[in-house]
Length: 163
Image (tube, rainbow, N blue to C red):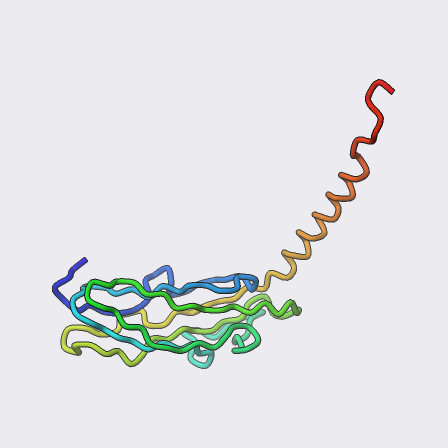
């Protein structure tokens, strides 16, 4: 880590585009400090669904706060030497039939720090895709039910092999 410069704040490649299951619940989204860790930096964040990098295609739609995820906004402060922070993102499982995927963004903005040597990193937006996993759960539930029925049908009774 270069600790002589204040650095830049943003998402690493793994967090720039995420795919989460609808049943995920709470996910901790990592914000990183790149190219330095000297001094204090601050940045604000918020969830958005109007400014997607790419509009959903096919069987997809924009995610809706309160239905697909909990809207979130706040501020993060990086103290000297700190290189990671986490933003809690809550995915809501509505258990309703819907498109296979929905999308929303987490956007970093209003960077505060020495502007001549620091700023937002090249990736300041994380696009999150929520995949519907209702069908997966239905298949697993059915398989579990069938297995339980088979176990009951073929379970050993009170008699021994000699009888």
